[in-house]
Length: 158
Image (cartoon, rainbow, N blue to C red):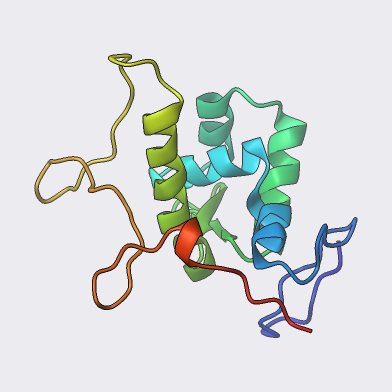
């Protein structure tokens, strides 16, 4: 993995390069799109910070967890900090990591709609203030028109 100069605003390039360099979605998947990274992020959004807690919650092998945490730190998604006790390291979401919240909610909502049989129980993301399920995400124009794959396109650079 190539690490950019600190403060450069450039993400660390994956060691095997970008899968599709001009595509923002492909780059995002290259950085955070594998199963364990997404589950680590899910747990980080739920407040998990300690290596041992991630390992216990996920049941992932320690070497895989170490690798994914190291990559998420290198890519600026998580920050490694000394815990208040001074005895262990913790992993906290950076501003960049927090900006993944909407994408994580979109994946969660897709899973709720398409990965469970009708009536099958599953966890639900709820608003802390109202204790009600978070509304389904959707994109819209300023005039309220819903944006879909049918009325949007990717403008590629020439």
